Length: 103
Image (cartoon, rainbow, N blue to C red; front, side, top):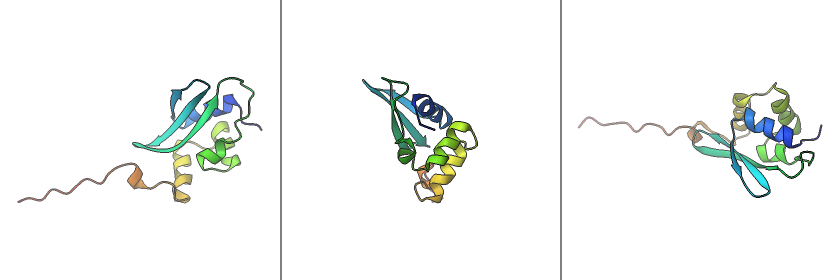
């Protein structure tokens, strides 16, 4: 399977990516909490244009990216893969609350 604009947009929806519109490309920005963990471009010129760079920019294998398109892999599963590969920690999601001292 070739990654096209259709698959690129499907992954963006699945990962709840923020889409920023540019002149020639849209940018899909994936956040975990307030931190950007990945981003990739979506070409708008040709729907058939290849987007085979997406797995690399998402830090997953080609099969895992296909699983995002075809539904076996969801957003939580994607973040679990990033954690397994050391690309994401819980610190990226929330800042620990500072303890308050009773003085």
